[in-house]
Image (cartoon, rainbow, N blue to C red; front, side, top):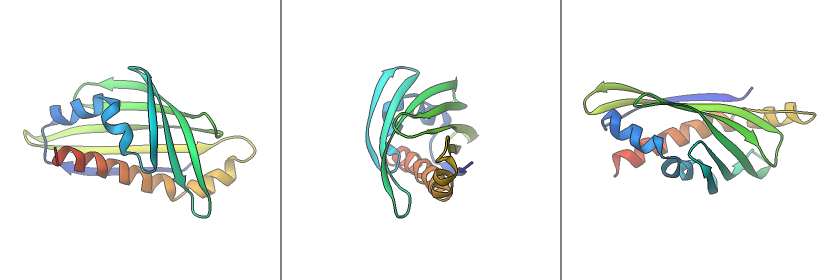
Length: 146
């Protein structure tokens, strides 16, 4: 299963980082290859993004269901491919270092299913870790530059 984790320090209080992550409209556009997102309700939205999988580029649409919201601590989500046979999960975890610094951990796991699952998984082996790295860093940069 292709997965990745990235941990960064952000020069921002944990409650400010939480307010940003608690609003999916703020972080959804930061996914690499972002095309658009649509909010169904406070616990569900769809992401549309262009994935560069080496020799193949694909437009992927995924349903994102918020599975857990723990204030100032964690937002976790489940992923399901709408136009590709994919499933997965991810989270952002926050840890207060001090009053002005927050550790942010981003995690993402996406797997191909069905007959083409093993092919998709091999193509995503480097894509998923790079995506979680880029997304987590983008969240940190957005917070530090606002």
